Image 1 (cartoon, rainbow, N blue to C red):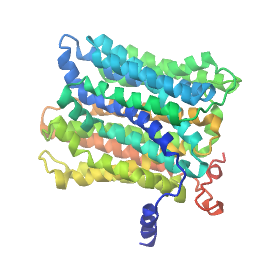
Image 2 (image 1 turned 90 degrees about the vertical axis):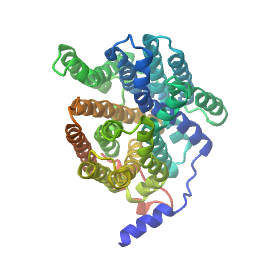
Image 3 (image 1 turned 135 degrees about the vertical axis):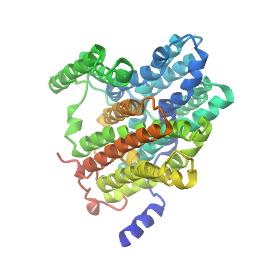
Length: 483
């Protein structure tokens, strides 16, 4: 019991870190807005489909797919450009592009303009996200970075998790277009505040290898598109097979070119950090479970328990609230204990929450006894995992690699998300009865639990930082990063 009491005492301590709160507020607001759009449109999709009855569902699915593919494809290149050209400049450019895309989506008179708006949004989001994290890291003293990045990552995860509930409220109040219009005031305030409180951070250097960036982006886009459309086109169709083959050819070419070029598209030295490499591998696995679970829970509550979209959103809200409350303490805990123990605990707790659903949830709705404990366990698991993974993914990196480090982690998360949703859709299918639906949801939850446990297993290889040799309150990140 003593270790548990010590952990609780530590999590209750007030932070003495020197987080630059104005910079944190601006960067996290923009990150929240972008992350929210990853899930809020899923809730809006049925309403969008009713607005364009003459357009096929396959065509409208590009409202979701176009964002995922373009966002994932451009992240790495955008992070590299931000490091060289100025993080604040690229952050503001991304904010402007994302705002224009949101406006286009909100006023779109046709499905094709809506899809075009989503592409514009994705381009802006790809520029904005890695620059956001890099600006926060640059402005934050080294001793406070683990907590700052953990809170940044936690709020991003909170945005994705609360997308269904916030989206359902907005859509009930004003229709699906407000899922996009809501971004406009946030972006305006963030843009004005950025110019006033966020200093520029520029590393400079040679122009990145444009051919390498194009090759790398095409590889990621091919992979994301193959996974996204596999269920629609058929996993054995020539288009999906060709996309997987293209990704398999382009990815090694991009890596080989980056290893030889003076200004590579992706700095491979980033992966020499043991902590960074493990964090990105764990992020990929965890994202498969998290994003699959997120959609599975909404579908289960609405299709098996017959909750309305708003009721389902509110039913899963306690978990995201725990993420918001525990993100900061989880970062401080990781700084004290090391990344490994916290991430292992997070993965196992998340898996335990999904196992609760498997063993307890049935066809009859019993929210307090058969759902709430599971969603609370999931919330604790996410709070101990995603925020700390974000911190570990940039731990020990020099300032000139903050942008690309964050971009790599966001790419791993995005690919995991696309894969998790694709697996879920393939597993759930179109069940013929409630009992069959329950069986398929249990399989989906089991896959998510396995992914979470796999993430915990990868995270167990983290070396514990030598904190006992650091000054009071400091965090020695580089000591865990020896290759």
